Length: 465
Image 1 (cartoon, helix red, strand yellow):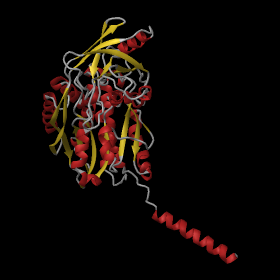
Image 2 (image 1 turned 90 degrees about the horizontal axis):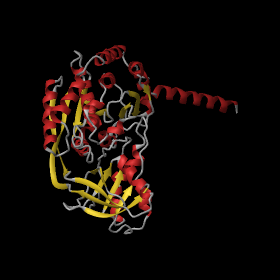
Image 3 (image 1 turned 180 degrees about the vertical axis):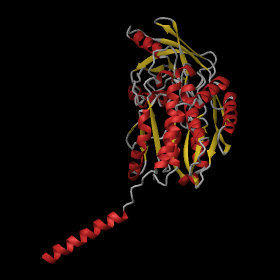
Image 4 (image 1 turned 135 degrees about the vertical axis):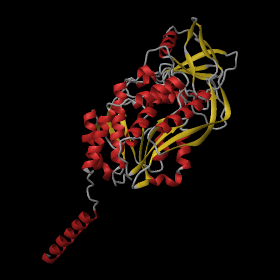
C-alpha cells in the first residue's frame, strides 16, 4: 500500500510537470508595441481624417443603393481616396447580385377615416402596379400572431404588424423586432395577404419610415411590403380601437433586374515580417437610398480607413499586414462579404483576426472577442491602452460585425469594438441618416481605438484560433 501511494504520488507529479511543460507560455506584448499603440491613440484623438472622409462620401456621393449609379460613383470615390492615403496597394473584387430599384411609394387611409400615411418600400418588395391596391387591413401585434392564423385566411387583405422595437445601448432590441421585416412578407404571402405593412424597425418618433431588406426563397412569388413611419403606425393602431373596418390604399412600384455589378474596394499595408498574415477591418460602402448613409455605414468606412491610414503614415511598419475592405452590398444580403469569403477561401487560414465597424459612430465602450479562450489573456494586456478611451474588456461572444459573418463561419477569430447605439436606430435606414448625426469627437475616439488595437494585433506572434 505504501509503495502504491508512493507510485501514485510520483505519477501525479509527473502528470503535473508534463502539463506545465506542455502548456503554452503566457505571451507578453512587447513594451515598445504598447508604447507605439499609445502614441497612435493620442495622434488619432487629434486627427480628423475620418471626419473628412465621411464628409466627403456623404457630400460628394450621398446615398449608395447597391447596383445604382451612385454605388458605382462610391466605388470610384473610395479608390481615389485610398490611393491618396498610406496604403501599399489598392484593388477591386467584382461582386454580382440582383438589382432592386425602389419606384413609387404612397399610402392613404381610406376608411373609417381618410388621411395620408408615410411609408417606404422594403428591399425586394413586390409591386402593386401603377394603380395600387385598396384592401381591408388586419392588425397583428407580432409576427408570431400573424404566423398563428391559418394559411389562406387573409385572402385579399393587407396584413399589418405593429410590434414596437425596444431601445438599448447595445442594440439588442433589433433582433426580436427585425423578423417582422425580414420574414413577415413571406409569412403574409402564405396567409393569403395581398400586401404587408409593418411598424418601422426603429426607436424614433419621426414621421420618417425605416426601410430594410426582406427575404424570399428563390423563385417564390412576392407581395408588396412596406414600413410605416412609427407615428403613422401608432395612428393606425388607434384607428383599430374604433372597432370599424379599416381600409387602405397602397402603391409600391419597385422592380428587380436580373443582375448588377459592384465591387469590394480593398487596401492593404503590407507586413514587414509576415505579410501573408492579415488583420482585416472595414465597413460596407453601400447604403440605403433614403438618406446619405452617414450612420450606416459611411462612419464605419471612414473610421477603419482612417485607423489604417494612421498606422501606415506613422513612420513604423506592422509585422503583419493590415487590410481594409469596404464591402459591397451588405444591405441587401451580405453579397460583398460572401463573395470575399468565397474568393479568398484558400487564404482564410492566414486571416488572423477581423472586425467591422457597422453600428454608427457612438463612443466605443467595450472590446468583445470571439477567439480561442487561451488567447483571452492577450486582450487583458491590451486594456491599459484602450481604457483611457473609456473602453472595458467585454465577453468572448463577439460577432465581428455582419460582413465578418462569412469569415467567422469558416473559423476566423473576430473582435468587436462595441459602440453606444442608444440612438442608432433613430436614424437607421431612414432619410434622417445624414452627416449631422455624427459627433466629430466620437469618430476620433473610434478611430483611436481601432488604430491602437490593430497596431497591437499586427505586431505580435499570437494565434487567436
